[in-house]
Length: 413
Length: 80
Image (tube, rainbow over all chains, first blue to last red; front, top):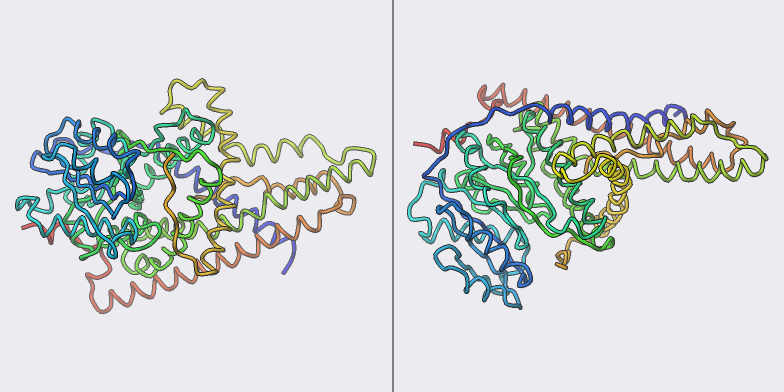
């Protein structure tokens, strides 16, 4: 095959990704008609799957029990912790915090298994007092999750639509001022929520995250006894299966859950490798999507699930560029004159950093204290930050190829 | 997980500025870029195959059950 054709095909990856990203940015600017009113009969259960979370659990429970809505409880699922997790849950307000303890050897089989156990308990124990599962909203929150005080007020109207099966809220980093890495993770989640998730509301392909996902119990029931799979990205898996079952997933931009950013680069890459590997596992959802999901949403989900392949392919391009730059420097020295023109600098810049202005713009709308210049600079750094996916991707692929599936959870700082 | 901007997409611009034979390392850079391109063509082929598979699956489902191709309104089913 012609070398030229292959090189232009590689450029087509960037054109496709750029067009898609810009298209979603434009789509995300559209306003969504809001369902007004509230469902006063709805009951909210916050599920916290906890394995050794003594460092962060008390603060999260304090936030939940302080929510102004009276129609909610927290169910702490202690996954056989060695530390004071269960004790912390026990000392909280027993009216608002329920504790379910799992024990070895049945415990510690992943977050999905713990959540399934929690939902099984909700269904079987009578804790819900005979409430209609359609009016029970289950929310998955990480043990370090800090919910906005108005979260129920913000999410509730989405469930006025009887087809809404789940609603994902925004995700922020509460320690975003703890350094550049934390700030970039915060930017990453804001960009993901405010551009991609917001746009996907109009496509019908909103994804679920591991933190801040609100689901109707009847929607979970429609997925069978064990709604969460044992995938490394069980949240992604669940969101797709809800869509395939005919439910609508929504994204709420007016409330967020704040979690702890990872402050160590190596740990961050490891976390993203796990997500990457989870995405690879989710390839088994493709037949379901092809069969059950309507056109546009199906195309978007296929694109989303295939993004690991595109990441691995695009990872070759910066490498290629670096080799070319080094070669050009060496060639210029050998030739005794510069081998590059002004165009050489302008082209790469425009191709690589146009998105930085969009990211900066979107992020500054959330972080109004940032100056324009600061936001733009952050957008530029964010483009490079995206490259951690390349390292994470190859690591995740390696683990998949070598059959390694177990991961230690990302440690809290 | 979405496609990231990649600085490497600009390799042809290097070609505009300097003759390839004068720049050491260019063959390696081109080979890397061509590998990505070949992978992308393969990706497009697989996606095309998936589209055909989807068309056949849904056509088959419609033939056996006309309502099967539409979305199932589970919320309506669950409600009294």
